[in-house]
Image 1 (cartoon, each protein chain N blue to C red):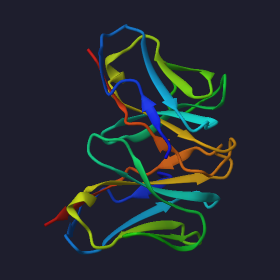
Image 2 (tube, chains in turn blue, brown):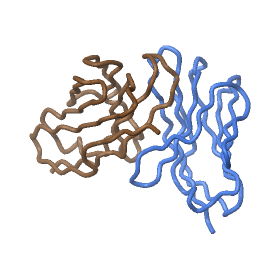
Image 3 (cartoon, one colour):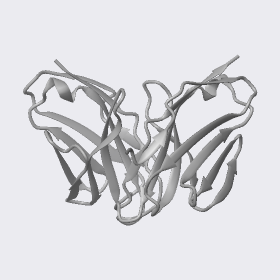
Length: 112
Length: 115
């Protein structure tokens, strides 16, 4: 079983709609959660960090964390064509020396 | 903003060559990481370093070594390059102590082709 799981997609989203991405993790001791955006051929770029249960908003992005259910999600409001990318979920577990465990990523395609 | 700089965006080398990939960060971060990324396999950790001259193996260290002589610089070495090491190589850095929960910041990546 993979430690961090994401649907690979592609997730097709009409421009202006909300994109909803989900990520589940297996280690209940996980403490820190991140979303990275990666454009094709480019390196991952940090877009959100979340450490406690609940919602965290930053511009058009909202991260949601539920440690009891072991999932973290990312909402992208008012999706734009420039949001078309692969979104990577990453998790740090206790005792992992701060190493990130990455999901395989969800490809998002925003259609005009 | 954190700046992580990798020495080359594209690199072509021949089988058997010794290859050096360089990474420099400007934020005085203690922790630095080397990953490779391949289609269908995602990001895989090769090595990381939590201090000068300190290194730890990641998930796929075979065929690689690293060097960290100065805090800002972390080098990845392919001792004898092979075609299965053709990949995108990503360097990252992170502040804080060894178990810190701060995020990692990535360089632009080096696309390495071994012929």
